Amino acid sequence: MTSYQLLAAAQTYFDLWNQKNPNSLSSCFSESVQLRDWEVEVSGLENVVDANRRIFSTLPAAEILVINMLPCCEKMTVCCELELLMNNEERAILKVVDVIEFDRDLKISALRAYRV
Image (cartoon, rainbow, N blue to C red; front, side, top):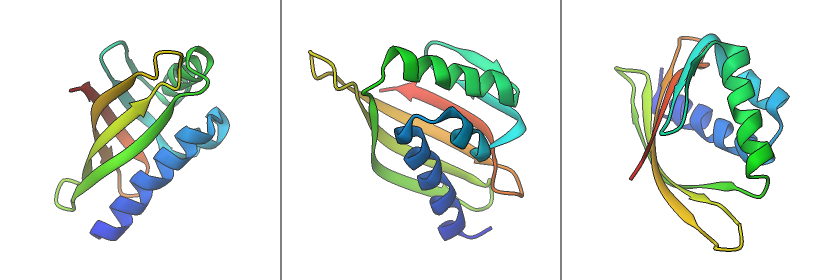
């Protein structure tokens, strides 16, 4: 796996997340994907897609802005510095770090999100 492939896969995930289409987003995940953030911990494709669907429903105008991405080919992982623009009345911005692990097919096998 090259750095370019890992970065492109991570960017595709963020682009699809910003489109708020759970069906399209599901194409980024492996069947056994695991998601953990400051509010939820789920595993399995359907559960992860449902967790994202709930986020899109609760925060329909939210948008991820990628600040920086750092790939590690040996671990097939990309660490991402992000801003989650809430686009609500308060114009809140959450600073977030995502650690995204990929499988050999460049599907996300684990995603851990941390508020900074």
